[in-house]
Length: 488
Ligand code: ADP
Image 1 (cartoon, rainbow, N blue to C red):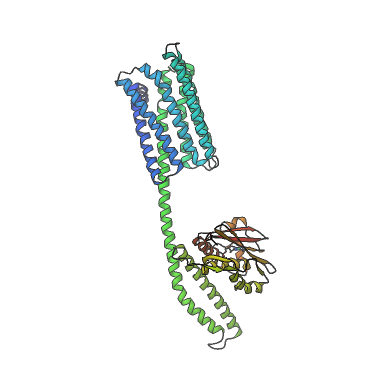
Image 2 (image 1 turned 45 degrees about the horizontal axis):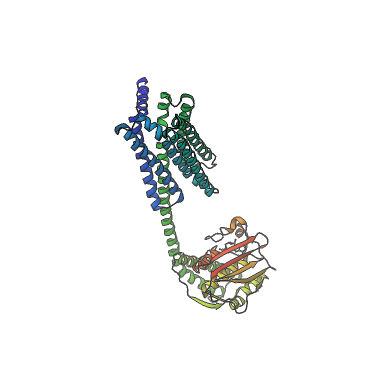
């Protein structure tokens, strides 16, 4: 056990020597280059901003290690004096490290700060400017000595630089750790990133203590400082690896889910298709039976036949809707565009009869020659779907108003009702397949939950959009907007 500790101590002691330092830097260079390569290749496949910043951060760390290893090699094997190295490259090495840390901390924080993303990058530019300014001032101060104007300037510049840059590193790392730890929904990678930053933090803290209290010459502190950057690098590598693997896994899941969805849709459409033929016969015979054409029925039998006929009709409608939607979703529908008079259609639609039966008035404010450029039958279907919903969800005595507005290259049709309205949480969902609000359970009129999904697909096909504004208890207003030829 004791031997073990001594051996480990020896390893770190060797790492503290110039040759050990070179080995360590080369190792770090290798790892950082590898991570940069991994991130860049991921970026080429999926160009996300986060990956670009991570690549820049690891690229600059890798560059820092490359420069350091070249300089240290010339010190060890090329006759460049150790003192010269310590004197002239100490600040440069620190600056490069702080710069890489600025990039690194922001790259890791970026995905978790949704609101202040631009702020975060402004902050990193600001920090880089400060860094360049401090470095420039210290270098100028140091250069003073080279021109033999005064002694000890280099030593002092290095001393101050050591303090300032270590404080910068400590601040940056602490800020990153604090921000990561204050994220409420912590994923595993967030915790691992915070730990990596924490381990990294030990190095600058020890160096700062060494500079302030021992003139940066305490060998034990130098040696103790050694394992931490390495450990932090290994932890960062793990985080990046986990991030990439996690993404690959999610992608695989997504492909799998897409395939499942496709199979499900195909299954539903095949089954629906097969059901349509027998349903047509059932509907026909139920009609004949109900009307007494195949023999007289008792009152009770007639009632039963009425229910069978109504339910068959509903099932038939549902199946037709499913098939329509399936065709639309699989882009098997094309548009036949022409001009038609929307006003004529609205004034003569069957919806007036349905509305009148329920005591609802449909008012159209459309100009009598309101022409529209669209696929006539499909656009009419959208209007019918919206009007029949408005009738369904408005109580007797209510009004439905149809109006339109035209702007350059676009037309908007508004269908406003004074019905029961749609709750805020439902508004985003009503265009989904089979979505029906809770009110559905209590209402008399049954639907399929597909009317709006079909309307949306049809409007999308026209290159337009469908929106809704609604207030519970007051009513809803559906707006369809589609592009129009500019000369209309
Ligand atoms: P459904 O066949 O149920 O009408 P839709 O897709 O047409 O299916 O509509 C989905 C749901 O959106 C309806 O069940 C209803 O809850 C809500 N909805 C649609 N239009 C209106 C409206 N004009 N007023 C209130 N709720 C509506």
